[in-house]
Length: 440
Image (cartoon, rainbow, N blue to C red; front, side, top):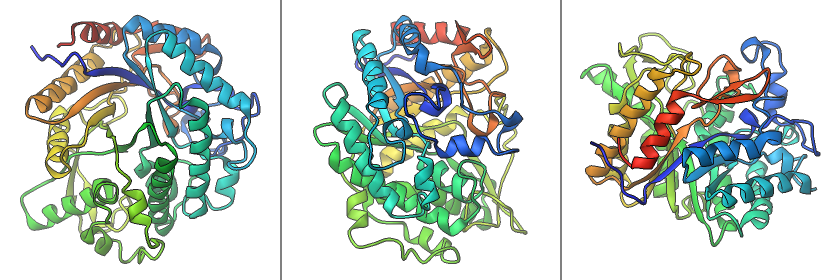
């Protein structure tokens, strides 16, 4: 039996644009995802988050579901365009009031709120001014963080600044697969830096709270022991993991990453004291893990999000896959956690997202197997000395899955989008049992 410490934090996670809906209510302004998802061909079936899971109107029902599952904590994101419709200046109190009500409802049910300040929904006016590749966006983010912190600091102790800046930077500005849909590799690298700078500036205004950031990290493996494949793995580990970890935790960009990106940028956008700001002390690091990456050297350039590494190919590891097509390998999570504890020691870690999409409406045995295997890897990591303090299942609800629209369901709670009826899947009942026992 795998057991967890009684203080281990059990939670579930969502994000604002994926579940809230109500995109034009109570003064909310447009975000880059409103614009992007309304662009023909940008999302599967032309789906948008306009209604999503209607959480904006049904949050009390959803919090009651969380309480029924026995969750200790709920990770959600705050929609910047609800708070500042223009991305700067005027504050709409109706937006803040929604998050006040949600937070109060959680606390009344004994559930700790874990808000994320940015989960990809940049106010469209800021993108019109250049978006994250522009330095000013980092300053605007810090101002927004201060506004939200002032409104909720008496209720919230744990704050996450950014969710998956890799996706915001490289899927948004290099491949165009995510909002805002640009294909500008140099802009993507600038965006990555300014996202980190925004994190550091925001950390300064979140005083008196526990502050972290969430990264989508992965275990990168070479396809073979050959030198070319080993170098391919080094390059991808650099642009996926270390380009964020090292500035945050070592106040420096890795030398090899800068060399790999020499044909893309000279890092002239990095100003004096930026790295000191970015490396503000973290109280915790959030980790979103879904699948490992198996990579090999390629003889011809391959278009990928891994800018600066055109001759690297992501390989098929031959393992079972989730409904979205991601390989299932819980050993990758153990390897990732072990590596983080070794290379960046003494930092409390939380799994802030882990889950799988399967086309099994209620009897989702495949999802249970996925969660069970990954939680066992967590328990194994803890037993080996990794300071892992909590786990948030992704996701509480079926939702708008970004460019995949509504075709992929990650929720442990089924949402009938036509009626908005919520129904517990078997995985939700299973997870509630794990939480109650504190063991697998």
